[in-house]
Image (cartoon, rainbow, N blue to C red):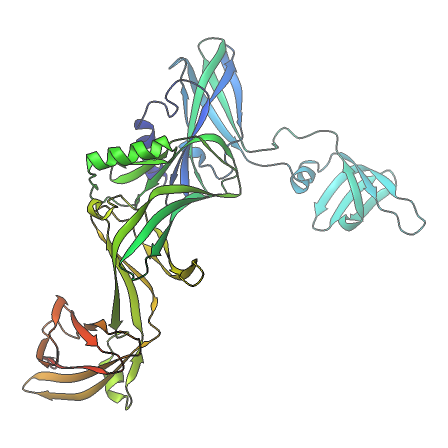
Length: 474
């Protein structure tokens, strides 16, 4: 894990000698799909010649201290880090009391009724659970925390900090102000893509748009940051996704003019760079427009029936037909010719359709897509058809001449107001399967799968019946 993160940090740093273009203070943030990020921050720091103890505050509390890289930008090589400590024991009541054991404290204890509150001053012997134990001039006193109004301490211990801090022992070749850059990885910050598809009236086209959702719980905020997003499965190597240069440049220019995201291939992944600075606060969910809306993308709605599992014995024992759901799928191609052709990071696609009665958008389903390069086909499973019913029953099952013969009957009933085509996807029990007879033409789609297109008229049952055989026993 450590080596992987260090490798990714090095890869990001190699992408540019400085994430800010010019040598000036600023923050750069590169966020990855799998809930971590690389932070690069340049600050002006004053050094004395010789050894210095430097404190770098406001780092992420979810930092990986082993990934920290310090660079002096204004005078390369002039400052070197001899030691580094990550101070993350933050100030709170328990941490303070723990460090004041055997030290002087003053405790204000609530009064009851007409009794005024009292003050107990002495040596703190223990702070265990709900009680404080203090040795005062009058003896040992056990004070319940519920009765404590205030505890007065003389000073803040040196090993406690108010915010996560990197502390360095550095050697400087000269005195004066330098611009230093610190880069590190942090967890608890991630991003995902969210897409919206709006179908047209006859489900033959859609408008497609995308947003980035950034969720930051890293323990730090990043003000006016240069923002980059990396999409891809960084835990394994996958083939580079080539981009059409002319189209990529056009999209990048359009997005940059609007201050949106520009996309490019980066190693075996894809990088999206925001064309403007953005502030990502701690414990904040931020959404940014990700891709320009693509209007009029050609699409196709299909109906698919697939029997859940392949349980011949359960089907053969059932005296009644087994009902199944008919899936609704929306298919379209991520091609330039189809007004798209961009690298799409994995994310959720929400599908809507306009209700002409009042011209309002209505939600009709959602699905998740994986990382999808350009020129690939997308298929969204958004729900099940209400008015199309599918039933199946095994009508025959016998063994002869070393083969098993099974006959399945599948009935599609269409209660819509127009004819439909339902694709019946069947799983086969053996690689050496053979269709002996069928009422419909079939397509062998894989070693264990076939597809049959069944046309169903309105209120007229459409029946697919086929007999398949395979070696038996096997």
